[in-house]
Length: 99
Length: 404
Image (cartoon, chains in turn blue, cyan):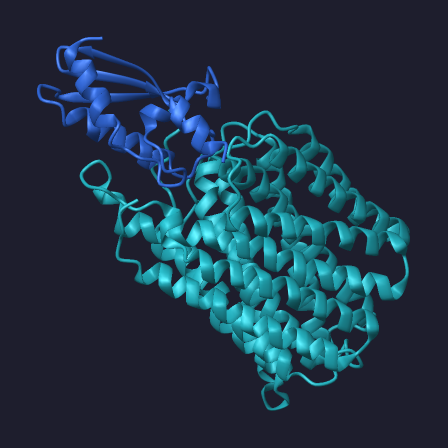
C-alpha cells in the first residue's frame, strides 16, 4: 500500500457511522482505494443497501479523501457485491458487536 | 451509484415526529378524561379520542417515516416537497379540529369541514407519494408494499369522508357500522399494517445489522395481508384468521431478522421491538379465538400495545438521527461527534418502556374485564409513560454533544 493510499485510509478512518459507533475502515466497508495523479476512486459498500445515511456516508468519504494533500478529485464507487458481512470487520468490531 | 440527491428535508420530516410525540401524550390525556369508554365504544366522543391517537400519533409517525425513507427505499425523490409541506399544513389543524368536533359536542358542526380538509390532506399526501413512483426504475417488494398501502389508504379515507357526509349531510342511507368496519379495515389493517411491515423490512435489519434473513416471509406476508381484507368480505371469521396469520408471519419475520442479527447488544430499540412482537403474538391469538371479547382484546393490544411499542421504539432511532443530522453531521471527520445512542437518555427510556408494559397490561385487562376503573388506571399509566417519552425527546433536542 502506497503512502498516499495509507493517508487516505487514515482520513477515512475518521468517518464514523453514528449508528453503530465504528469507523468505516474498521467496519470493513472500504473495499479499495485507487489513486491516479490526484484522482481518488474509493470503492466501498454499506452495511445495508437501504441505509438512510448512504448519501452522507459517501460524501464524508469523498471529503476525507480530498483532505489528503495532492488529491484534487474523489469519486465513490458504491457497490453491493460482495455484500458486506461482519467477517469483513476488524476483530475489535466483531467483539464489540457480539455484546 | 445509489445516492439520492433528493432526500426529504428535515423541516418536512421532523414536525411529523414531534407532532406524533405530542399527540401521543395528548391522546392519552384525552382518553383518560373520557368517561364510560367501554359502555359507549361507538360514541362520537370515544371515536374522537381514538382519532386523536390514530391520526395524531400513528399517522403522523407514518407520514414522517414515509417522507424520510421514500428516497432511500424506492431510490426516487418525493414527487413534490412543496406538496409535502401543504399536506402537513392541512393535516395537523384539520386532524385536531375533526377530533375536537367528535369529542366536544359544541364543536360538532366543525366536523364536516375539518373532515373535508383532512380528506383533502390525505388525497394530497397519497397522490404525492404515488406520483413519486413515476421515477421508479426497478420494482422491488417494498415498492409493491408502499404502492398498495397508499391505495388502501385512499379507499379507507374515502369511507371516512362518506361516513362524515352521511352523518352531517345525509349523503346516503348506508349502514354506519359497515362503513366504520371498512374505514378501519382499509386504513388500519390495510395502510398502517402494510407500512409497518414495509418500514420494518428496512429498519429492523438495518438497526440490528441483520443479514441473510428470509425475505420471502415478507412476500408471503404481503399476500396474506391483502387476502385477509378480501376474505373478510366473504367471511368475517375467515378474515380474522387470515389477519392473525399475517400478524404471526410478521412475528416470524422479526424473529428471523433478530436471530440473524450481527449486533448482539440489546438496547432500548431491541427491547421495544421484542415487546411489540410479544404483544403482536397475543393479539393474533385473540383474533384466532373468534370470540367477541377476545377480538376487542386483540384490537386493544394491536392499537395501544403493538403500535405504541413498535412506533415508539423507532422514535429512539429516528428522532436522534434527524437532530444529529442537523447538529453534528457537518462536523464528521473534522472533530469528535457523538453517536446517535449518546443522545438518548437510556435511564428515562427504560423507565418509559417498563411503564408502557404495565400500562398495556392494565388497559387490556380493563377491556377484557369490562372494568372502566381498571381501564382508566391503565390510561393514567399511559399518560405517565408518554411524559417520560416527551422528556426524552426534549433531552434529545437539548443534547449539546458529548464525546463518544
